[in-house]
Length: 256
Ligand SMILES: O=C(O)[C@H](O)[C@@H](O)[C@H](O)[C@H](O)COP(=O)(O)O
Image (cartoon, rainbow, N blue to C red; front, side):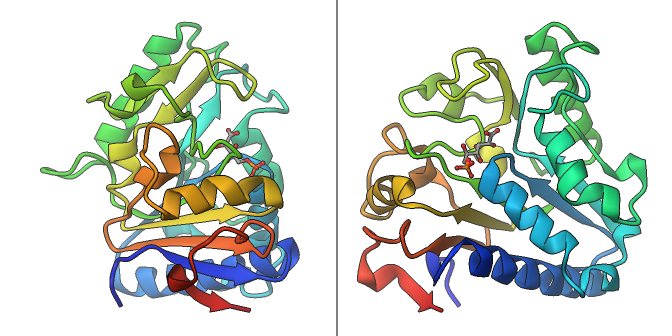
């Protein structure tokens, strides 16, 4: 199988999230057969959260040795601890609180009350990433990075027309002007996202169709940031029929 970007089309959101959950748990078991631990990057957003709930509700959930799984985030809203809009709070409620998972395995971005200076918060998370990064790598060995995709084609908190964020040589950036509220966010950079073994994007709804179609038709990363996403081994778009409206036929791997 090549590393070409693959599009898997599902009839609706529920079948999409159920399929991703089943694939995720199966892949994680395979990975843990080979590796001592697995590092996973979670995403914020509604489709990401629905996917997390589907993993939580899967009958196969507890076949995974969660003690050996670490969770990170692709981005975070720069808000105080426990704020309802924080991606880590939403992921804990949707999935992590249901897992037999050590707290030390949860690598959340700093909170705005703990580290009030957002630039320092970005440096704090970059240091934590570095603690788990092997010699010669730029980030921990992320087995799977989940990403939601915005209607404008943003992923994590990398938005169109903000070249300075995507080409930043650091691993974590502070975003001050996010068009998706809240404006202050922290985000992994594209190079870190693309250092992942696998990037799995989850998107549903007709409002995502244009961005996905443009990205797959060769739009620039500046215009449609998702166009710049490429995992080291696999890059998969899990979509529903509405989001797949503009996907070139040749790129459709499966329709369920
Ligand atoms: O912090 C965030 O908001 C997310 O990380 C963001 O990148 C999200 O994944 C997309 O905006 C898609 O969100 P939906 O899945 O809700 O459309």
